[in-house]
Image (cartoon, rainbow, N blue to C red):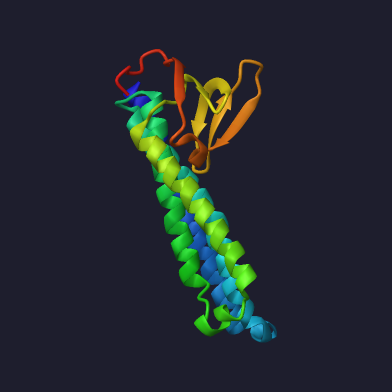
Length: 205
């Protein structure tokens, strides 16, 4: 069984390598094209947007493969809920790194930023705060593990089996087969009823 997980880890890391090489090649092609093709000269300001799109798309694919590698690595010696929690933490950390890279790529001039307007600033600030709150709550749930993937819980009047703990939401599958996505920041601080632990999970968690 351990060999099966090891094989899956190698497959995940192989995909990571392929995505990284593909990203590097596409970025080199984009840079080379804008530097050597005269017709693209007037549009050189758009190069940064092409780079951003490539980094965002392939970065997301790299992040997905890496988080799966973390899951399969932990799965070699631990249960599914623990591995799923570690995958969530890795995914959140990867998204933070990806956003940091994109932020450094799209440098905003402070003077220009001041001209955006107070309303836009408030909207962006509120959205950013909401995203960060959700992400921090997701990390808290993944680390503290008041419940695990596979547990049947009741939270915010919803009862169902925990299907996944994502960056922004926790997914419950209700008895009638529906999926309920609950924002993580709504769960933190709420009363959580553990109706049934997944078989093999620890009652001390």
